[in-house]
Image (cartoon, rainbow, N blue to C red; front, side, top):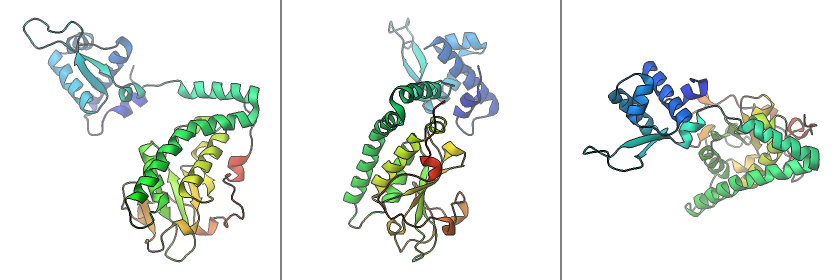
Length: 286
């Protein structure tokens, strides 16, 4: 079955007709498991040579893996080969992970209350925090000067799938600070019901950058991106205003409409790492 998610998994630049065929090949591998090019060709009603061309494209894209079939050599020809979906290829199809997570957290909330949900969120983020902390430590060890921790954290979060970037809000000496923006949230649907996930993530970001931070917006609450305010002292004075992404470079024209400097809240007077009232507000689980 062709789905929007499966279509999105086809690499950019692939002709539409080829893309549709590759979606059908992937769907057959999902439904029937590992198969040879001949088996796939018979099911699709096309030649094995045509199927092999599409399989080569899927293998190159990391969606399909090729391996020798059980039983080894097939006659005097080359060994029989079978093709199977990789984890990346399988993830292109719909799944029920969000439903499972919501069911689990509702059970936790019912039997353990909000604090139990928060403990689950903190445990879930502990591995991410450890990996990002290692990235910060490695960057600092490799640099004779203090590193921009927000930029390093953005790069580390990007490798984790958050599509993050760090930016300053205004020119040198403005005191406006910076923002960490995440264009993707892997748990947005779950966090919409359980804000403890956003709270725990905000606390992780605070520890990673080494100062109090404040959440200004979240995808879970309907905003376009997750935006976290970082105080001015973490934005190097010599940096020109504009975008600092995980990949470097960029300019202010392509920023994702950050919160204006005059809307940035005044620095907090305590060391709390809790987020804005809209994020901290406790909700009664459905």
